[in-house]
Length: 242
Image 1 (cartoon, rainbow, N blue to C red):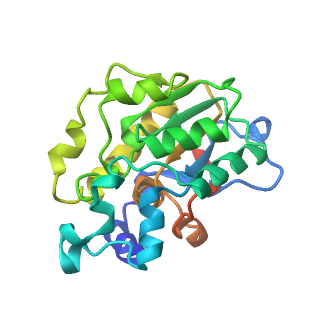
Image 2 (cartoon, rainbow, N blue to C red):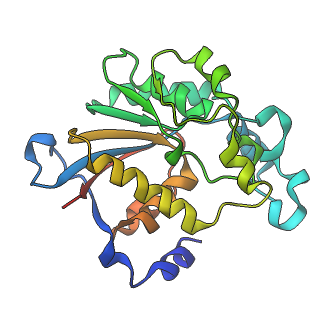
């Protein structure tokens, strides 16, 4: 899968911002002009992830149809963290990450992860649609109404650009959002970050988005960064914006 994505974008990396793994012991004070640190975090284990493990079958939409895919069960709509997922999220608070700003997907499992990973509510946290999971195919990636989500998460800032209904998901349903659209979302969030004063940020997001972001939204030559994220995993990178 990753080799296929790589082949699609070969030749276009020169137009993208360079992304490299953050070196050991490097902090915001060590950055060169135009560089920023991004902590790329996948949410902790969700109920849909556990179901896929139990069935030893993550997605069968292509072979058996959507109705037979565990990610499309009604109980996994806007999936929540499992007990293990909450433990994974809480353990992120021990990593010593010190972002100046946290961006978080509006799905419940990412919001749960962000609030458990950064529990003291001292760091500004902004909900951004552009970093949510790949849209359209799986019910676990359909979010609830923003008014309902807000009731459970009081600390993050929900911007006015967030639609009450999940119009983005509906615009692709029941098809999978094309890779190019996800890459464009990744580029859009980087453009937004480029205009921000912060030098160190965290993005709490999803595996599908992260894999496409690394391959298609930035110029990354580190094969290890292209491997799939585990639930509750954080990787720190430096992105050059100038």
